[in-house]
Image 1 (cartoon, one colour):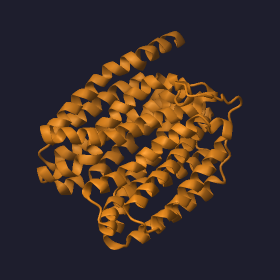
Image 2: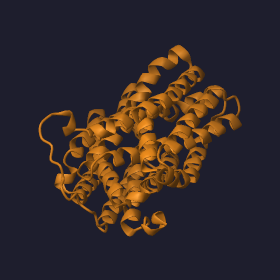
Image 3: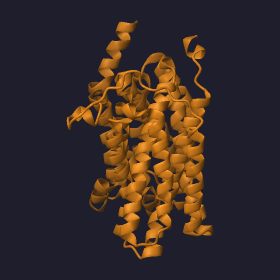
Image 4: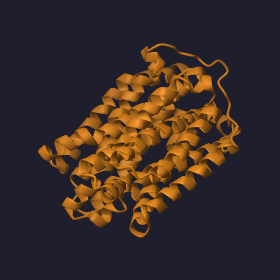
Length: 394
């Protein structure tokens, strides 16, 4: 009865989820088009185009490190509006034609805006979700990112075929303005006693209590980055390009169908009942991917990876937020996203060094083993404590 008595679908929850959708939509739309723009417009090399694409995530990481320690003292709503204004205004820099160097600068500062804005939305949503429905609420909130993950690349690739890059940037600018205007209508609860941390200690940049679960999401995100970055190359090798075009659609459907169930399970029965199966299913998904020889195998892998990694992502976020005190919730959110971005951002580089030595099939097989080992790490880092907590509560 307690779960249904506490209202989840409030105006503020819907607005913050919508803002997060818009942010993620712009991120993925530009991720699939900006490298082509760098090559076509400025004659960038392949490596330069890759840097143009990836430096955005470095900017995001810097933004998170900066704002995580300040968000509760500045104010969550103010941080959100500052971040969205900066994020949207930076889109105008894409129209400035000053070569690859300036484009790299633009991508970096645009990433800074993403770091500020998304850390604010993650912190705000964690605060407005009722405590007894935290897992369920974060699961629903994360679905806004999942939808954008499916829609953003599709719209970006479609626009790149039929419109100019200027039109793409205009579309992103319009979406950015809509997200900023939407945020003006949200009511944000501020921290009662924000903890102000000074100096250069570890606690000044991350939440120590969130670090154990952050290690789990780093490994999971690094493994998932191999799918994000190389699935098209792998599908080409297998002659399954058509199947690959709907891989992330299947992935997104799997996440969308499962998260409402797994989020509620976390709130009722604890994190372990979701995290252990999710990690195992993610490992199986990578194993299936490594052995895929048909469209059915490839898409089955997509469904399993969505069911696995998609719920690891929302589950670890809920665990990180619950681990922190209310005054450190912004720092815990920042710590989680720093770990997620680090895995997604640096994973393709390290995995790319191994692929020439192993091939795609073997790298996915190896990563399946890495993820399977993460079950033990999760037990040590969080699972054992969660089990003991539930025993005491019973």
